[in-house]
Image (cartoon, rainbow, N blue to C red):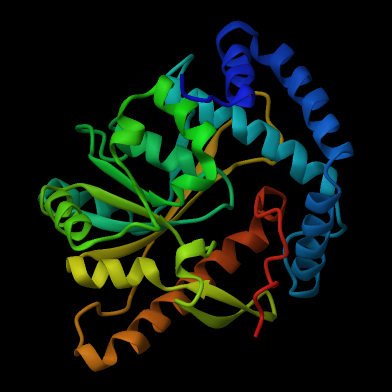
Length: 306
């Protein structure tokens, strides 16, 4: 029997059997317990929020508890999205590049979406997979991520939605056959989702040093390398709760097309990928300042500073 996540099982119970307001109260209790036992997470959150304050972000004082509580709600909303339990979480699209993305998909040309751990990245994939993005038809969504680090969680989500692992690819095992598969999905109007704010263990050297919130750190370039091989447009996306804490969650989704021309000479690729990463870092910084309590990278984000 595959090992499943106890946390996901508990969250699924809350989604299926507990009324919203009572669920809100229970999540507050669970979040408080996590807060009390997560010294390293509190330290990382405090460091991030101080950096946001120093760079003029939308925050007046540090509150590690608010972030951890927000994260607890986000976990429930992830499970709610994958299990399709209850009503769909409302999402408001901004007047940005979402129309370009949906038009491209409608025309049968997919794209690479670079997500992050600001807000609820899984919500982006759920909405796209079940028709919420185009309002017309389901999409083929392929997520590239470090599968080995999240085995029990993957097994649990696979039990909720069999499409999830079918369309997940290990970031540490990208081969020519993988690129061929991704090309087929892009050419059929599918989307490839990659995180742009975490460095896969197998790609620790494929990074570029970029200022973020006033301090240099390393950002991965793998997503842009894949996009250039696929000849696909790149879009940056983030989905954040309208208010940090809500009984009935509502989200804002922001989409921005990467302005960098993905066509270049082979000798210019590294510079082009680095430019893409800089554009992404600027996008991420903008929304990290606006929604600082929904930042869920619970580690020293500047630990790889060189």
